[in-house]
Amino acid sequence: MRQRGHEAFGIDPTPQVLQVAGELFDAGWFRQFAAGKLDQDVIKACGLPKEFEVIVLAGNVPAFLTPGEFQSLLTFSLKLLADTGVLIIGTTARGKGGTEHQDELLAETPLQLVGRFSDWHLSVFDSSADWSVSVYAKSQKRSGFTPPDGIFVLPS
Image 1 (cartoon, rainbow, N blue to C red):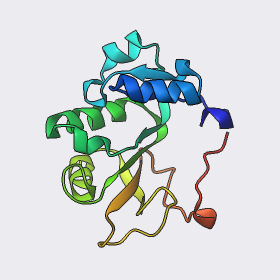
Image 2: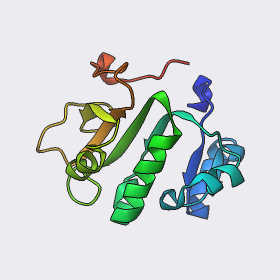
Image 3: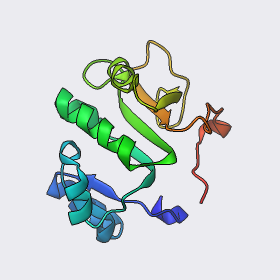
Image 4: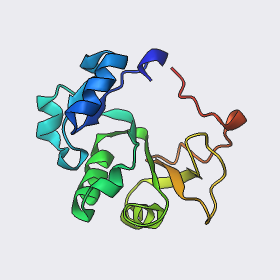
């Protein structure tokens, strides 16, 4: 995302993961902390923006969080998202943090599901999918979309 001109940050609690990320990209783009511990104090201490257009939970993040941490992360993500922001969750489709759990936790929030796919290439999602990429929009200004050639690119 940075290579396409976006201001983007990555977080991970594991120093080894951040070391590899820092070898591949500018290490200043990454912060070490657990997603389940995200709050306003962490945002401020890490020098992160107070608002985001997109928040991406990639790498099966929900599976590593307790249900309470996942709920807290979703609640705080909603506060961080701009009015037209989107939350994208890539994780296993069933079980802890899967699609049913996500939909249940987000049912009473302004975030609405606008797209769900079976992989990061945005292949069609169905009940047999092992993986899911779910796109939730905060605003009614966003709606579902048909991915062009299986690729979704954020405009710069």
